[in-house]
Structure formats: structure tokens, C-alpha cells
Length: 214
Length: 81
Image (tube, rainbow over all chains, first blue to last red; front, top):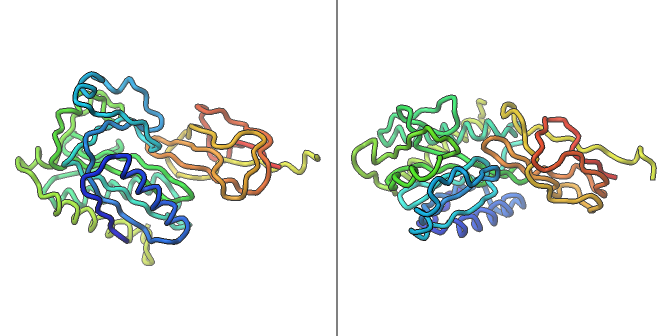
């Protein structure tokens, strides 16, 4: 698995990079690639999301935060620096072509990484990753020719107050948390990226690799 | 053209669990010519979108599911000739 670290980038620039990587992966010009980055502040809507989950458009307008409609699954979320974006551009093996399983593996990877950061993260009956009933990571993926893009955002050090201005993932009743909020201190983003890379490699190779167990 | 020349395009298996799948966006229109593997339609589950590829080369003669409509694995979504 190749790791591509983009730093802090605009959402659309990262999306362009993902789409190019998808085409390269389809054509066999590159291997499975995990793209890691952070975004400048932006609100994104999934393919089936309506504007009703944007509770306070004036708040974002005043701050110059764009609202973008995207091609991923899922509903609305908010991105800003300090939130770790993990975009797996993976070709799913022919014997494991299951969208639900793929999202399970993303969530398991995030749980593994967060636990190594000292956060008691879990999966629940609902999509995403949770800490004591609060949501810390949000998934939304897309596939072209069974190559994935988009992925997951994990609140690490980002300001989570703006989540109060949206219904995250279309769920009005959820609370949101971050690694910083859980630990009471910021977490080193370089280490967070390294832990995410290790977790994706470990979890996905266990399922999709030569010695697959799922 | 004989009707038997048409081939039904079924919604493929994309997931074992996500329930209803929504037809979100047709990429082709009736009358379009496509090659095998060209993207035909984007469908959505709860947390994923998926571009369904054409299983054959030919011309799309009918689209059987509208945008916004729910579909199940195996449903006929289009016909190609």
C-alpha cells in the first residue's frame, strides 16, 4: 500500500488528486493508495443530502466557508484543519466486492488507530466511530470500477464547535467529539497519520491480502 | 430488430447488507451507445455511491428505473441491444 500525504489542502484539490489516483489504479499504473490530508474549512454534502441539515448557513457564509455537494455517499459533514482525512483508493479484490464490508474495514481501521492514540473508540449499530455515545469519525465512500475513493474523516485536533451548526450525517441528536477533547490535550498530527497508515495496512491486508481471513 | 436481441441489465450485487439502493444519477440516456465497462448509472447506499458499469457493448434502448427510485439487487435497470 502506498501512502500519499498531501498536507493541508483545499477539498477540491484533494478530490482532483483522488480522481486521478482512481484512474491510475483502474489502469494498473499505481498500487492501492491511502491518501492522508487535512482540509481548509469546508462543509460537504453527500450525494443524497439535502440542505435542511445545514442548520445555520449564515454562520458559514460569514466565515467564508464554502458548502460543496460531492459524489460520496453519506450526508453532511464539516472539515477543517486538525481533522484527519483518510481516503483509501483501493481496488477491491474480486472475492471481496462488498461495499458494506469495505466500510466496516474503514471503521475498524479508525478504531484501531484511535485506540493507539489513547481514545476508547468503538463501532456501534450506526455507521461511524463512536466514543461514549459521541461521534468521532464519519464515513462516506464512492466506487468506480470497484476502486474506492472518498473515505473517512477523524476529528483529532479540529474545532468541533461548528458541528453544532449542522446535523452531522443528518442525525440531529448526536454529539461530536475529538481526540483532543477526549484526551484533554492536542495530539501530534504526524503521529496520527502514522497510526492511521499502520491501521489501514493491518486491517485491510488481514481481509484483502494473500492470507485473507474474511 | 428482434426483441430477442435485447439484453436486460440487472443491478449487480454491490453489498450484502445495505438494504435498498437508490438510483441517484443516470450517466447515459436512452439511445446512447456504450462499450463494455462504461459507467451507466450511479447508485447509492446509506454511505456509498457506486458507478454501475455496462456488462456489454451496444445501445441503451430503455431505462427501467428513474432517478430517485429504490432498487434491489437483481432488478432490471435498463435494456441494451
